[in-house]
Length: 267
Image (tube, rainbow, N blue to C red; front, side, top):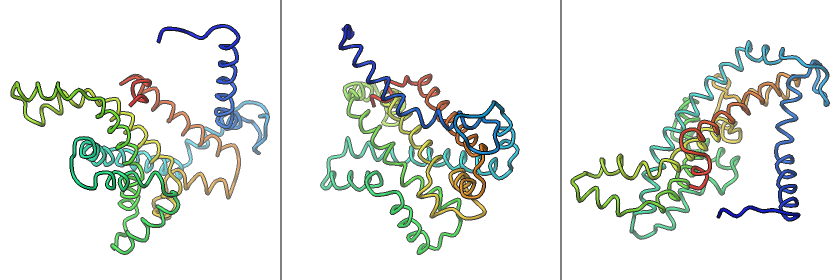
């Protein structure tokens, strides 16, 4: 629709929207403001302006190691979620077999159960299986909780795919793999990209599941932040949080650049 709101109704609508956005962004803006405070204690409004807390964070070996681990874990989780989620989405949309609804509910169940319960259940299962490598356990746990995001977005994209184009490609001699790569994938690219971004960010910032599966040797960023909050709560903690917020913003901008934010979210 090309029609735009105007008049007093538009003023009310835009005012309410601006108020809601401010309410949502206020905690993030507060964290970012405190991270540049010159005080050695967390105070608001900030006292002075300095970037020394960022310098301290970027020289903290524990934080840098945790950041490296979290990035690698999130990348591995994203790859695993896509490898499992995309075929699962195809089965749910194109499959015609008994119990389809039950299987769909099972695959999406991690979105329903509390994350703490899911993490504890994964810990018990992996312990019974004898898995003692924290990195493998973290990867398995994060793939379990992030795959539903990929499935949801890809399922929605697949429902909008024009199957006549696939039939035409097959009629012209393309095999199934070529048809998927040249015809289907471009149509669901926005859903795949959105699901991958959700998987990356959920994995990177996941605390409830990570808390159960990590150990003292392999501690991702959420656990390091929690330890800092408990031990020494100075502006370096908001600085760490601001770095994570900026990473999320970069991810959203990349999604907008690659496939378009509106198109991806529409998936």
